[in-house]
Length: 562
Image 1 (cartoon, rainbow, N blue to C red):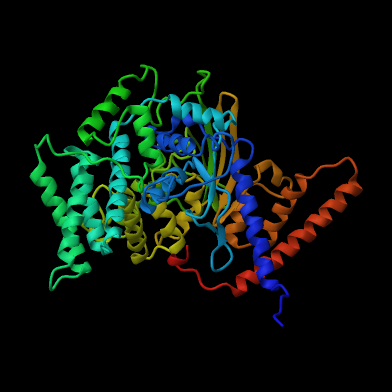
Image 2: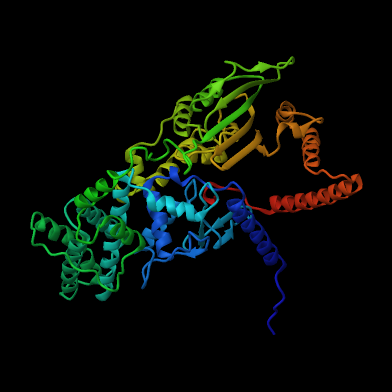
C-alpha cells in the first residue's frame, strides 16, 4: 500500500514558501506603497492600459489576472511578446506584481516566481486607488514618440511571427533558432518603414507556400525548405518596394489580435494596413494634443490636484580610520548631494568619522558612473558594443536582451578584477537601474580597493499630495537596520553601530539592537510588556535556529544561483 504520510521537509518548505510569498504580497500592498502614475513614461502606461482592457477592467478593480499568449483570446501573440510585456511592467517601479506562481530558490532562501505561470495585480496610484492609475493611463497623451513606436514595432513583429508559425504548422515546417532570429530582424526592419502588418502577411504566405513546394522536391526535406523562408520573405518584400498595388492580407481567425495592438487600433487608429511611417505620424499627432503643462517622463512630478511633490533625504556617512579615493568617487556619484563638510569629522580616537549630507532623491546614486570609475581604479575597462552584440545576437532593436547581456558582461568584468560576487551583482544592476542610496555601503565592501565607508544613515521623506513615504534606516557593513537612531538609546547610537560592525563586536551590537526592539513595544502594564518581550525573544531564538540550520545545509552560492 502506498505511503501517503506527508514529507516533513516538503511541508516545511511549503510553509516557508507561503510565508515568504504572503510577506512579499503584503509588502507590495502595504500603506504608502502606491506610485505616482503621472511620472510613468507613456509606453509603460500603454501596456498597463492594454492589459486592463484585455482583463475587462479587472486590474483597475484590484483583481488578480493571469495573462496568456496565442489561443482564441490571447493577451499577446507569442510567448516572446508576453515575456517582454511582463518584464516591462514589473521592472522598478513595478506597475504590476505577481501574487501567485511563487517558488523558492534551490537553497530555500530566495523567493522567486515564474512569470508565465503567475497571476498579477496592479500597483495603486499614489492616492491609493488602482482606478486612478487607470484613469491616468487612459488620459495621458504620447510623451515619447520613439518609445511608443518601438513598442508598436515589437508587438507588430511578434504578431507577424505568430502568423508565420501558424502558416508553417500547416505544412509541418519549423525554423531553427538562427532562422527564427533572422526572420524577426527582417520583419522588424520592413515594418519600421515601408510595409504594414497585412503586407508582411502577404510575403509570409507566399514564402511559406514556396518552402512547402520545395520540401516535396527530390533532395529536399522540411528542414532544408524551412531555411529558405527568411530569404524568401526578404526577396518578396524587396521586390515589392514602391509597389502600391502590393496587397495587405487580412487577419485570420487563428491569429487574433493581441491586447497591445488592439489598444493601438482603438486609441490611435493604427490598424494592420499602416506601415511604421504612418504609425509614427499617428503617434506624433497624439503627442501634439498634450496640454502645454502636461509633463513627460520623470520631470515635473505633480499630484492630480496640482500639489508639487516634496522630497527630503538627509543622512550621515560614517568612515573608519580613513577617507579614501574610492570613498570620494562614491560620493561624487550621488547626484546633487550637499555635504556639510569636505572631509569626515573624526572622534577623539580618530576611529570613526562622519559627514552629514542632504540630497533630493532616494535614487540619486549614478551606478553607471561609479562602475566606470571603479574599473578605472582597477585598471580594467567596461564591455564594448561588439562584446554585447556577440553575447546578445538577437535583433539590434531588442533593447532588453542587450541590457541583460550587458549586465552579464559587467558582472564578469568586475569579478575578473577581484570584486566579490555579491558586490559585482549589485553593481551590474546599479549600472542600469536605480538602487536605494543605503545599498552603496554593502556594495563598496566587496571592491578590492581601500575604503573607509562603514555605515550610512538615511532618513528619507516624500510627500505627494495626500500620499507620503518615509524611510529611516542605517546600513552598516553588510547589515541594514530599520530603526531610527533614537531607538538605540541609551545603549548606543549610529556611531556605536558602525564601531561594533567594524570591530565584529556582535555582543555589543546585539545589546543595541535588543534595546531598539524593546523600545518599539510599549504597554502601561510592565508585566504584560515583559511577557510579550519574552515571547518575542523565544520566537527570535526559534528563527535564529532555523536560519542557522539552513545556513549549514545550503550549497555554496554562485552567480548562476541568483
